[in-house]
Length: 112
Image (cartoon, rainbow, N blue to C red):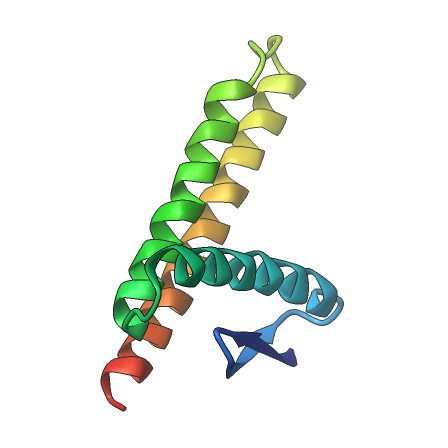
């Protein structure tokens, strides 16, 4: 298990991840940092909890738009359907992990 430290909204967060996934975690954190900057530019001063919630909403909106604009093709019988189902399960699992991490960060912020 590896660990990286990401910075979002000028705060550092240690994130545990699988070995070899460090660059991906940094890339994902960069997306969140970009959303944080955008929101702060638009809203000015904003609480950490509200910022976290709004970042989550923006990311969820991006995901839904991507799904809407690029719907999964109708899978052929057999292997294609199995790959599609496996990809859906993997995406769901990753979203659960991200959701849990967001909840953990929010909990840490609330305790400050």
